[in-house]
Image (tube, rainbow, N blue to C red; front, side):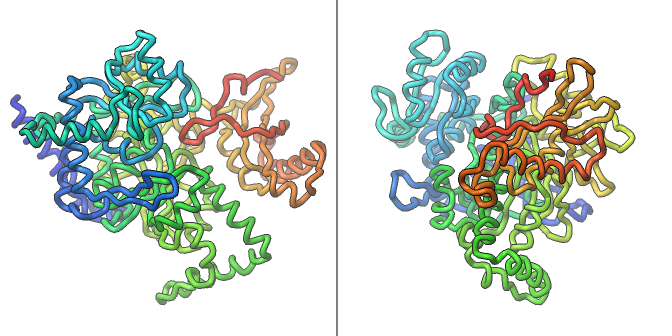
Length: 598
């Protein structure tokens, strides 16, 4: 088959996806605004044509400077220049890693690789030197593009001689003997001015691997997820049919961009829809940057939204206004039906936390307490949760953005064009969630046996336990590998108990596991708990002893235990002062010794 025939087939596929969306009678497919795209190169080129003068990126290029805006036209020119320069360096069809803080340079480097140079390998910036070295060896990386913080690390890795790294490129600042992003961009511009079209005319085949993404799981060895353009653009076309994205939206980017949730939903999605991306300077600058950018869309993980919620409520209680705030939100539900929004007038201090223009909050990465979503919805935001995995590029389900269709307890409605089934159901209808769609990965890199375990007859076996209702909303009860088998044979999902614990104002975070009693062999439910220091001090004072704190925490655990059957009750707790170790998607790593005997 010729390349022209391949491109015709790809165009027919993209047209059919959008046609199926537009003709669907599913009441949750409410927005018919997706345009056919065959690959990410096609996406960024058509977006630059449609939204040329729209702001694509907003970033502070130096500390204490205001945000700089970059248009779609300027961004495409940069991507084309970088890609042209990379090819001129002999990197065509090679593996190129990108690592560093969220920034315009990271984003355009990713696009320059994936849109015609080679295979992009986003690396987790929180990994240690030995892990990074192992990944670049495993992925056969030829070049690494990094922000300044990682220059020394990769110079040492390259100098070891154990890798295939031929070239290092620094994304920001001046490089110490290392080519920089700025230099690369200028070289590419000069080459294009001389007629070099090697990148602009590069051929893209949408069902071949374009991204090698190593998972940052909470347990086990990282796997290389092989994604194609087809996998990723399928997600881009279908998700906005459930939750609308406008060309005037501004996405606030705070989650690590190498992670597939932020990478697809917070980076590529806004670029597909003509919206802007504003990069946060770091976690400690969230509130400051929100007030400067005044974004409309905010993607986060449960831990982030839970922290914001607790901070808001703590301040409200300090002012003695909790009852008033609850009353205002209740009245607003009625007044909004006649077009009067009293929340934004009477609760303006809360809105200021989010910049004043916030429209949509999306939680992903793990299940969130439905009560927190309801709080933000009652404030007047569209607050929903979605569900996905790296292996699905990553989208699997999403709650609709219309309040009447939302299910706060659900991770979302299965996305249009995808199928879902529950395998090996128990008597409660709970089993393993399986997904099928064009977004399911090509497989795990160099792991055919692992691939065959999770992809069977086109179905991806997620490893998540849950159920679906009659309207195809998905509910997750926990991870299959985390399930605790109680002494009576019943399943206990630690995530469920951790969710209950998180509702306490005195508990910052927790991890639950089952420990086997060495004498009896019975399983005891154990919870390691980190107290919420500020709340504890307000209740017990600054000089409370460990015994007092443990007694208070036990009182909270006892309240939960009263609502649970005997086999689910938490029988032992341990109090810790330090945070749990987490991966970059802010999930607690479940350590191998969490299942130790007692």
